[in-house]
Image 1 (cartoon, rainbow, N blue to C red):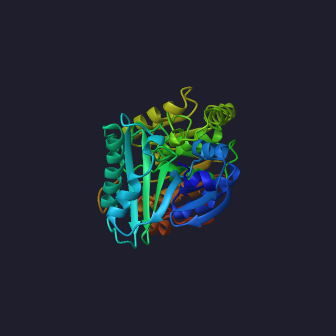
Image 2 (image 1 turned 90 degrees about the horizontal axis):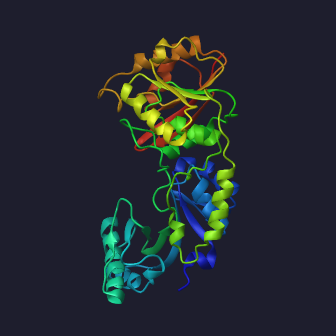
Image 3 (image 1 turned 30 degrees about the vertical axis):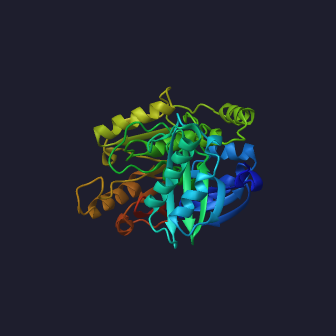
Length: 380
């Protein structure tokens, strides 16, 4: 059977709407063509090398979907009967596991979980009819992920070539409350326009996500360097030699970073412990320096890139007013950070005015359900 992606070489990258411009730049750099924006993502054309490169290197994209079949879908029975006919053995066998994530809009099938269930039944029944065995579902770490998208009664079944969300880099084994998602942290690092030589510091480092993403950029480490597998390895036309070349070329570009180029601190001991552990997973040489400390007791942070995601309610007591905290932060930046540039992520925009500094720019960036802003301050 020949699938849609094989006929067209077109794929769909799932990416947050507010960083599509950054993700498009990534796709171009990795060899994608004919990039076209859509709701919650970007369509693009790619050959195998570009597809593998995007999955291995992208810091901003969540998943890349390879469309298998598109069809009219006015009922769950038609969904089931159509899916039953696909050659699912092209992608996995009944001893392996699978999972489905689905979305529906403006269609007669109104519930995504029900749509996913009907597709799951079709896949399982197809194997049972052919082999007498049903594959198992594993929603945590399946061997293969499938996506079902139904819009205006038009359904597309795709294989997730990423093999699970790409934001899961593999370094974050420990966390603190309300961590910044890796793709957002990577967006922040990209927006710094960092020269990789100016010292970068995060005085509210939490579990170290911003530090880790900065390290991966500074060292040229591919975002997927720690991932054990990718979904494109399940495609029937997967080329192991092309993948080996992409992987080897990516890893050869790694360069060690000097000690102290990236550093961080946090007032919470648990956060420092988590950050040290996560950073060590990327940087066993411990050239990223992390310590426990209160930002307001730091003598100075001059001539540096300061980037941080301060506490904003979720990591503090519920309904606590942080106005004084942000005023003190603004005073610290004005008095002790001459020659530095600060990039502060505000989960709650109301506090931007409390800091008492004139922004050089403000960029909308969502973090989960938070309509946050990244704000740049040039300090003299």
